[in-house]
Image 1 (cartoon, rainbow, N blue to C red):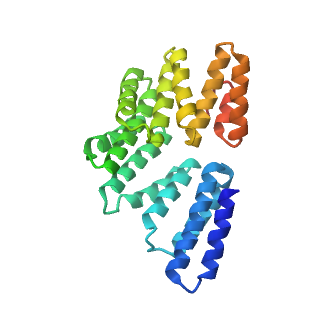
Image 2 (tube, rainbow, N blue to C red):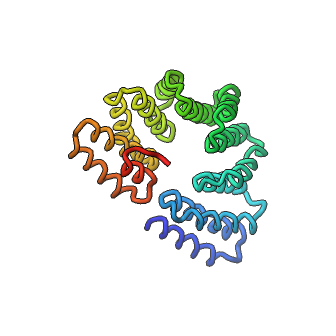
Image 3 (cartoon, rainbow, N blue to C red):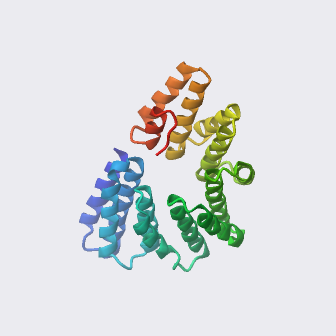
Length: 267
């Protein structure tokens, strides 16, 4: 509802200032950005968001929103599972004049390879970011994102010890305020612990996401999913049902609802 209000408000501003090109374009992009944020909360609206971005790009090919627009477009295509248009959108970032954008582009290339289960190639992309990122805050963030991507690959390859070490290093070295990195790091560490028979330790990692990083919606949904499943495995059925109900109530459109309902089978 909040995003719909923003969409409507930006639309009115764009109409009211249609004779002022700069202001109208900014308002239109504000509307499009709100449509994207709405889609990030409701996957059913991803198609609408992609259409809005594509329309803006065609009508404003050289706007100051050029790189941000392509990043959002790539993220949406990636969320939809369409790697080719995602790669084309992210490739635009590699042409940006700023190092942190080039690092972003490489990380996204790794993500696309990971989506296609090309794990060794994905690790090579993430390693290139880890090795080349500098100490500037933005570049350090890209390096930590690459560490997470590499850890996800290692988990899929069942190289749990190496993944665990990398994840614990990220958790220690990243500020607790950096929820976009801390949340997936704790969730991936939970995955490692769960897959290596340390369920009691795993549940605490997922609970950390629930307690401290719940604003990261996708990660929070994943954490709730596995907290419910682990409580169930421990015979704590009432607690498991409470958490499962929270997941379904707060994230009804999340794919993690299906995972919890199928007993932990992803995909």
